[in-house]
Length: 403
Image (tube, rainbow, N blue to C red; front, side, top):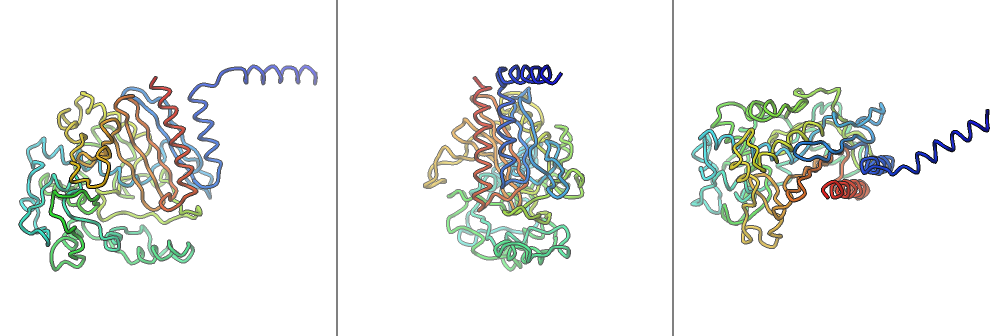
């Protein structure tokens, strides 16, 4: 019996190894091997066309302590991919005749925003949406928009020196309404106002990525639509697409499905929310964001859905000139909150303490990909290498499926 068993086992093994692995199996195996290396707590992946999910999978852990697997249903904050939703909300307001891209913000706002070095030059919605408003993020002041979920429970001294300093600062932050924060930051005499909150150049003259300007654009939408921005996006985007487990605040998603987030050395980081939430505070999962990207890129390709195709194309096409970009590559351009890389790749990425996200669609191959991780990657070379290895494997699979 033993000999027969061994022969049978050998037959099964030989039969298995002689079968060519599918592209999906190879990708799954590669990503699984990366997940077992030290550096990333967990991550989720999706590769898709407009009509078909080609590959989806979760790897590693959403919660290391409790060995809870990371899946495509795991919820986490997604950082600046959130800005693409602000772009859609703007386009929805344009479609409804509530504003235009050339509307001056001071025609909308209940307070005046004046560029202190160019007071004669009015800031427009277009300036905000293309990161050319002249409004910039003064780092220490912008960090005041991060509010910890339970600050009294956070031991700031358990981290390395740099994170400890950052956590001590965050523990002092308190929540306030979006409009109140923006007024304090952007109006002369405001508690957070500084002339350094603005570039030396005039509105429209120069590209400078701005979270604060994004939040201001969302606040303009909130005013003209006459309801809070989070309700605007719920009604016109999340509900329309069917994005489950998606929301701007911790109490709008399931805590049971929410990932823990981790520092460089895989210590748990406390959860936080953003006062300026439209610039980077959205929480969702890989499965829901895949649906979103399929709908939006379908809209870009001619399938009208939550927006007319003309508005989708306007929103996603490159808007910046070489003079606005300066020394930066003209191919690395922006639409209205959507990255446009030479017309061939459209999407966005996101990075915040404890997370990194990627969401891109190749318009020539007609294939998109998404990557989430619940681990800090900013200034973390070990994690960054593993993300790059994962993304390289995803791109190789995408290229193969596109042939």
